[in-house]
Length: 203
Length: 203
DNA sequence: GTCTATAGTGCGATAGAC
DNA sequence: GTCTATCGCACTATAGAC
Image 1 (cartoon, chains in turn orange, blue, cyan, purple):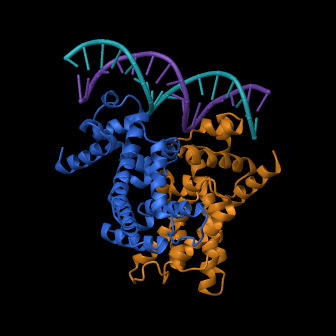
Image 2: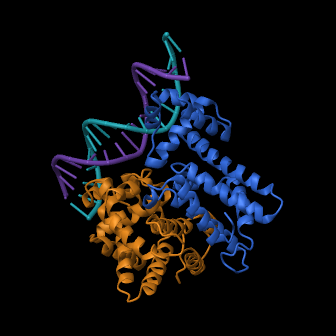
Image 3: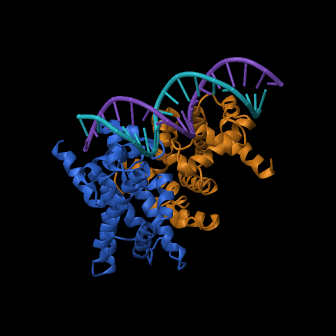
């Protein structure tokens, strides 16, 4: 295994308390989820991508659902870490800046996985019943929502809409075929500009 | 079959030259695609949703891929119709207004299908090789992109980024769990406001 | 930690009767 | 246009050897 692969494994493992072998499985699964969707990815495909048999994969996770769960939780943990850093800031403006640029960086770094994971209907269903996911979204909403400038209104739903639009725009845009050829730096700059226009925040 | 179901069938049939029976299949398939993804939806699930057997579905479409194709083309046709209306306007500003509000209306009307279809990896792969899809995206980009105000820059990539962000934001936000409870009128208003901020267009 | 082998199930797709 | 019945295959998951 090369150093690049080790780095990915370490990041994936750290994000969800996984062994190196488990992280390798999740890593391969994420790539396949992005290409074929969660429902269109089989355990056999994951095993083949790793060059092992299905039984070897089953030794790391008891079911396919557990792999999906681990993959989703890893991405969720990355989001949580960004939120932790943002909430540690002293002013609300600084917190927003850290949150927005952190999310943009996350989406660009993990173009091929983060966005697809967040948009897959299977994962959405997964998250809908998970308190941890709702808590993360709640923290994002309360940081991005209040006085975000998106709506100019005062209803409680405004913040949720602003957050939903921002998350959808960032996670959807990085994967869009129209911008598939753009380099990471350009992508980051454009998304920060977008966030600024959308939220009146310096991303 | 009730009148509401007939109306949906008529809309689906008109969008892609389908018989009423074929439209019913596509209609059921779209619902299931939204819930389980394209890869996670089987012919048996579609047949069960319609209350018939697999063989009856196979009488309408020769393969599962043809159902996916028909579903995708239906949504693409709806986009094309909006573009046709927009390009018929006399001024560029009016054309943009018609395009933006048309897309917002489309996304809200078909919350449960349009957005998922556009974001499913299987459909993306499908579209990547389809000239018709690229042409539609090209027309959108040339209307939304030039001097859109998103970037303020002059590079050729700017328009594509603006278009990608706008499409991703609209199609992603309508399905987002954070705004699942919002009524259609509020959703439309918020998305128009978002488009205005993002593109400097009166949506 | 990985393998072979195998179970049970559901899949896409086809043939032919009504 | 719908049915029953079926083929061949890929799937999830398990058992047990190395």
